[in-house]
Image (cartoon, rainbow, N blue to C red; front, top):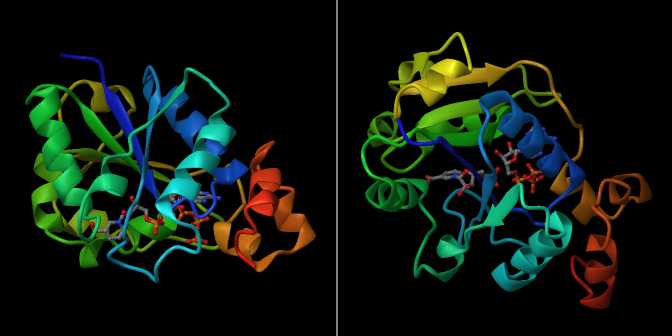
Length: 206
Ligand SMILES: Nc1ncnc2c1ncn2[C@@H]1O[C@H](COP(=O)(O)OP(=O)(O)OP(=O)(O)O)[C@@H](O)[C@H]1O
Ligand SMILES: O=C(O)c1ccc[n+]([C@@H]2O[C@H](COP(=O)([O-])O)[C@@H](O)[C@H]2O)c1
């Protein structure tokens, strides 16, 4: 079996320390070499982001600060049209081949919306899911009725290419991009070093 790939999609509008904490905890749990951060271009499921794709990618770059545990995949930013995750999963599966374990990382709030995702029925054949608990979201577990089988160990994810779901039940952060955009001082404490300066310099979210 090829080494597992861990993919973390998000609007990242802007990235906050919770995203990094979630990514680090997930990477450690599944033993991935690194985390592929996948900023969404034109989200199908929510209002247009407050910052452009270029600004959101620039803030991601500042936040990861050359940490080799992270890599940014900008394919959704350059794609024309809505950023459907299924399109990205199909492309990645094509690139990685049928045997590479792929794990899509989601917070519990995002996972609870899975039933409305574009062509979600095709997803269990393409990827595993790793779901991180998030304070305030007890979990409706739609993934179980959508074709993913519940895994009991993290090792199981590395042992097959797709089709399993594992939940990390302990939340690692309360941070939220909505709170950052709302501008309260406490939420700005959750910005990785350099990101607040970038936001100020480019007058984002005013
Ligand atoms: N504190 C957190 N704990 C667990 N998962 C999180 C947390 N913050 C974000 N996520 C997850 O990270 C992914 C990307 O999230 P996103 O970029 O939308 O950030 P957000 O803080 O949820 O932003 P917004 O408030 O704009 O929705 C989603 O799967 C989301 O569930
Ligand atoms: O493809 C879809 O239909 C779809 C619907 C909702 C969310 N997503 C993806 O889920 C990820 C998390 O979304 P968000 O809104 O929490 O940033 C992000 O990569 C989105 O593109 C994808």
